[in-house]
Structures are given as C-alpha cells and as structure tokens.
Image (cartoon, rainbow, N blue to C red; front, side):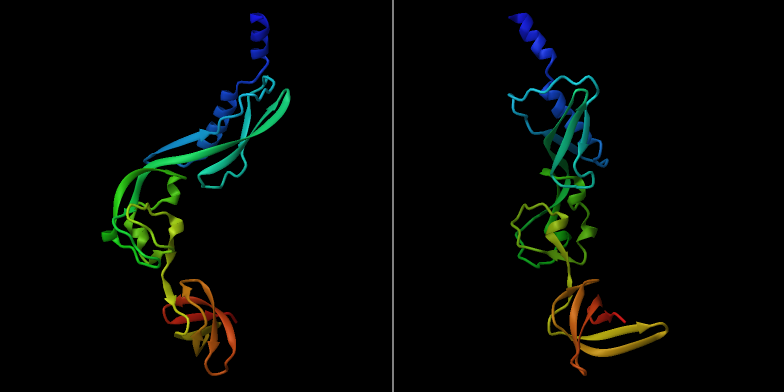
Length: 219
C-alpha cells in the first residue's frame, strides 16, 4: 500500500510547484520599488491531479502590461502536455499619501490635506500617489473619508472650462490665426475635447481645451 502511494505521488505534479511558478512569473514583471511586494497565487483544488512534468513548468501572465491587483497566469507543461490557469493577487507595502480629513467630490487636494504613511494595499506602487507634486491641478473624482489612500484613479484634472462659459475659439492655419467668441456646451479639463457654440454664427464645433479661456478648434 505504501509503495502504491509513493508511486502515485511521484506521478502527480505538486500543486505548490504550480502556484510557485505562477507567483514567480508575476514577480518577475513587477518594477523595482522602495517598498515590498506580496504576490500570492490562489490555492488550487486539492483534488486536482496533473501528471508530473518532465520539463520545467512554463508560466505566462495573461496580460503582462496590466498593473492591477489581480492577474491570471497560464501554467503549462510540455511533457506530458497539460495547462491550467492560476489567479494571482498582488499587494504592495509602500509609502502612500493618505487623507488627513474627509473631502467632498471635486475638492482640490493640497499638501495640508495629506500625510505620508506606509500601507499594505492591493495593486502595484505605480497606482499610488506618494509625491505631493502630483496633486497640483487635480481634484477628487468622488468624495473620500479620512484615512483614504490616494490613487491615480481617484484624481481627475481640474475643470478649466465650465458649461455656459464664454471662451475664445482659436483656429490655426499655418501662420494665420482666426479667433471668435464661443460658449462652452460642457465642462472641460486641459487637453479634453468639448463642444462649443460660435456666438456669432451659432454653429457648434468641437475643440480641445488649451487653458481656462481658450479652445483650439480643428481646421
């Protein structure tokens, strides 16, 4: 009986080795940081039995460019041939700016509103803000309570042009510039495309917000 169990074990690929291969493949893609990453593969069903691989396991994340907290890694064996997908989560322990107080939606955030703390959070360091210089010209997309870490996705560029505001329409054709008065039909941040109505002709055009009073129109 003991001999039969030993033979079965040698013919079955260790689930821990599959999980480890998945974790290593994700770790290899993560950028170097001052903090620390925690990469964890989901536990595989203990009833799963895959033939022992005669070659090194090959592990490939489904998307090497995604910087999110969850990834899926394909682990395959070439001899004998089998493959399996393993979910992997990524956490980072690194300095991040945290709100000292609750702030409402669209509120600007400055250095007095935040403090630097070391937190363990889901995702990679690139998604978190640790430099107060990155707060300039940005506002909150949604209200946040005190203690919230600041991430790139919760900040939006300041609205430079608001709906109903009078702006200058600027069209450039070589060395020539044509200017006209317009009225913004929607809010717009820097480099964002908005619709503007020409006050004189009443024609509606699209343009790119250059600053708080100018919209460049395509020619």
